[in-house]
Image 1 (tube, rainbow, N blue to C red):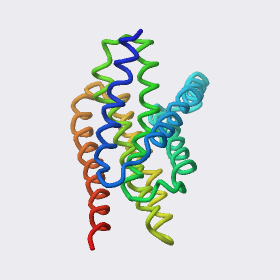
Image 2 (image 1 turned 90 degrees about the horizontal axis):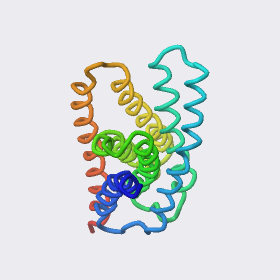
Image 3 (image 1 turned 180 degrees about the vertical axis):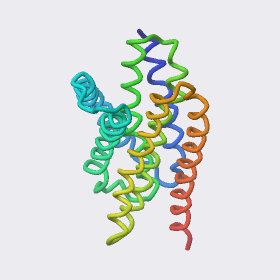
Image 4 (image 1 turned 30 degrees about the horizontal axis):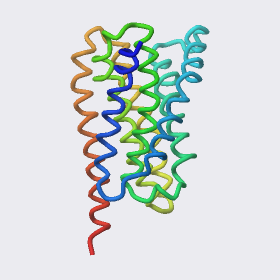
Length: 220
């Protein structure tokens, strides 16, 4: 039991620590990051229940539609909802990169509890693969969500609305593509590798841009 919990928590904490420590100028309060992490974890069981009902009732006629709505949309929309309504207006969200810290925190809260549940059900031997794919992909969706939410926070007018919309839609699309690859292709590994490389590049590129905005703002 301890081994499963440790294996389930470790990748999420490692990724969260990585992105948190990249916030070099004004680190977010630990209690705020922890709160976001817990909010993300609290989403797991309600979403799993909804997904179970949708699957059992065969609500969607195609696997692609189920993947988009029941997985990509449900998971990313509710993570975005938590992020937008508990963090977006908060006084500590005062730099562009802060959106990434909180986006990763909410996403990894969800991914970590989901990972522990999966390992309890299927065995600790899946821990490495889960760390490489589901946990890291959730973290990267969180980076992208937080990046665009940060752009919205510090923009105005129509640009603000556009970036806030992007912060919800782009993670939904990327998550749906991720699960479509897993569910629709027998040789999914050959497609997943370039997709994950792209996802890492895209997310880290956005994180770097957000940090550069902080540096520019500190210049005289």
